[in-house]
Image (cartoon, rainbow, N blue to C red; front, side, top):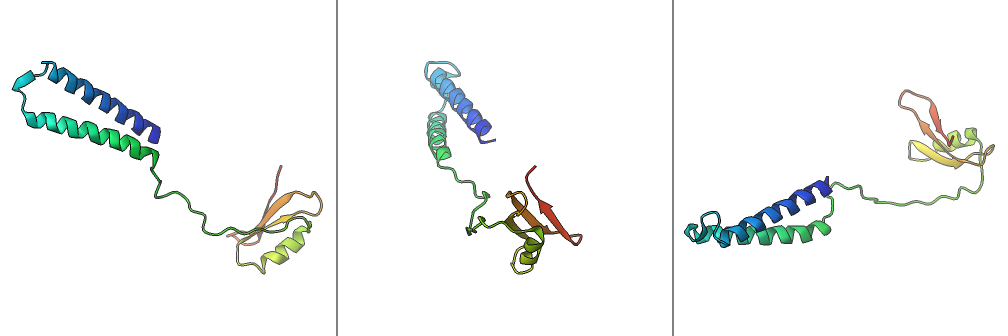
Length: 122
């Protein structure tokens, strides 16, 4: 989406620049046009250049922000039953663990409909 906005901004800047050059060369009314229009065209073209520079520094206000990071030792594998038991002692609705049988990382979670779910690799 931002790329399309940048493309439109660049295209409008080109059109304004071309219009301004043609107006100064005598097209579109030439000297009969008011000086106010020339000042407006100058201001708009300056704003477009500044906006193009600001686009590089744009920070999405709705971007996800990581507020806390936790690390766990997953080197010791545990059974699914132990993971469900451990789920009861954490303040989350999920528990990440290394499965005893396969050695893969899995997630056990509390389901809204009741019971538990298991997410594992294929």
